[in-house]
Length: 350
View 1 (cartoon, rainbow, N blue to C red):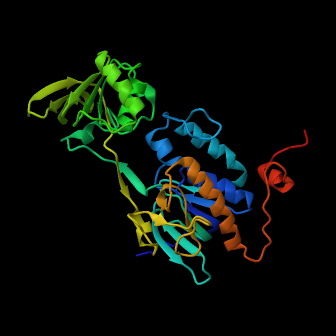
View 2 (view 1 turned 120 degrees about the vertical axis):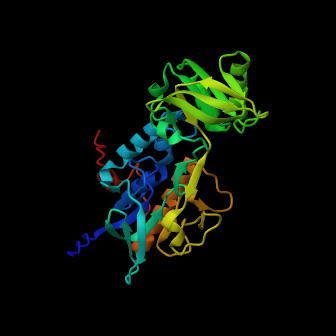
View 3 (view 1 turned 180 degrees about the horizontal axis):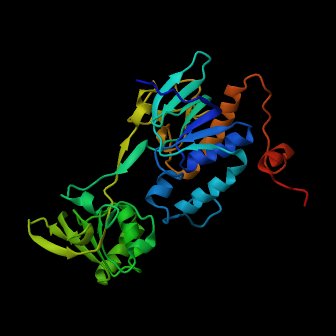
């Protein structure tokens, strides 16, 4: 038997585990300091939950933007980091992690890629995630054809009879967003109370009262259709009575199953699957390993994208000092530093 030779080790300054908005912005901050990055993400594209779960859903708390979609934010971050030529390892999962004798780290992915770096930054959100599937027999046959767990393309739902399951923010937000373009909307929840923002609840209740959407109390127990194309669902109410709902598209918002994955075995202190950090450097208990974004925890932590951007900036300066402890690292502003302008490819002669 011929043994397949191991792939050559790729070297870089920083490995970032997670290519969501916070991981992408970390590339920018690290790049300004002259540090190169490789990013590893289990998803097949950049953007993390923003791009995977709500690419067309508006985000309202990104500074200077009254609203911006998850996909547009991702696209703009990707454009911003182009000058630094980051290397992406997408649709890849970390399978092994080893600290070398020189204190650098070697990470191996499930594609047998080996990457060595002086610093590792964990920006993996809440870890790898997948939508929770409702206990409905045969639902897999309709997934990605008629049954969806996120809205990738709004036009996929136009003129359809839409069934939405859930009572949280995502369920209500998409009820409001899709109601104007679909043929009908039926919202199904196990309770008559919603776990969503008060403003969304008020708007959805107004649509129900105006009979622009239907609200049904109960649980879906069965789907029926032809050739993976949904035609309807069976609802079981609180009294056990069964009734049919006509639908050709179904959206399920039962939350996410979060798995920390191999990171859990890296020797890090964990607090309910979150990584405690100090707020001066955003370093972990393991030297050379940092954690930013939703994966970390500290007193006063807010799980906001803008908070992750702040964490990325502080982490980058700490990582630079860790990698080059004997250099005199001078803080510079992008508005006035000619060296930073050069890195960014900015022409300020005008």
